[in-house]
Every structure is written in structure tokens, then in C-alpha cells.
Length: 145
Image 1 (cartoon, rainbow, N blue to C red):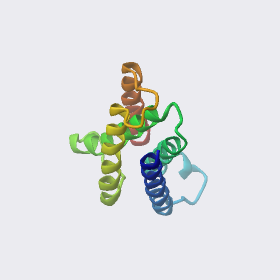
Image 2: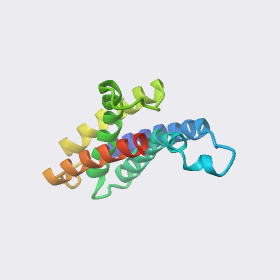
Image 3: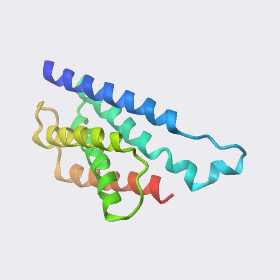
Image 4: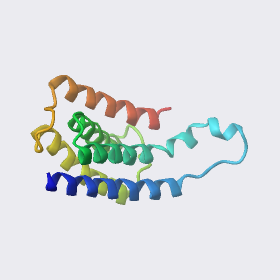
């Protein structure tokens, strides 16, 4: 239990730090019509990934029964961003430092989720597939809106 809470606190600290950094990079446009342009909403992609990390960290901290599912959603979303960027589907708006930090956290979270390290509710095959699909949807939403 102590290791689980330490990892959860690290996820929460990293998620909160990145959320603040990503919020500070958001440029709010002048004028009403600019809020309906794709460039405005693309800025929120990195923030959504860090919020997923916050939620997964919180679930891990309290030992929620859906912890492995939220860890998997975060892990796939965070890893799909640089993957899609490398494949040329879109240009990622996540800065390099964010990509590196989020990728490390994502690999750890996927390992925790699939190994069921802390003996929380095991991730079913359907939940694993659904977490991949949700990761793809989040990535495409913020990059092809």
C-alpha cells in the first residue's frame, strides 16, 4: 500500500505540474469568432493528457476499482501522441519535455495496469481494447477537430 501511494503521489505531482505548464502555454484569442477555430482547441490536447494522468493518479491513490482502466487510458493516450506524430498523422502540440515525461509515466502506468501490480480490479480484454479506442479518440479529437 505504501508503494502504491508513493507512485500515486508522483503521478499527481507530475500531472499537476504539467497541467500548470500546459495551461500557461494556452493563448486565448481576441474576438469571439477565434474561439471556434481549430487552432484554439488544439492547444488543449496536452492539457487533456495531463488531466488523465491526474485522474489516474488520484484513482491509484485511493485504490479505486477502476484504477487499472484509467491507468490504461492515460498510458495509451500519452503513447499514441508521439506515435501518431512520428507516423505523420499530425504535428503534436505537446512540447518535447512533456512528451518525454508523459511517455515515462505512460509506460509505468501501462505496466501497473496490465500486471495488476497492486491487486486492484484486473483489466479485462474488453476494457483494454476500450482504453486503446478512447486514447485514439482523444488524440484525434484534439488534433482533427
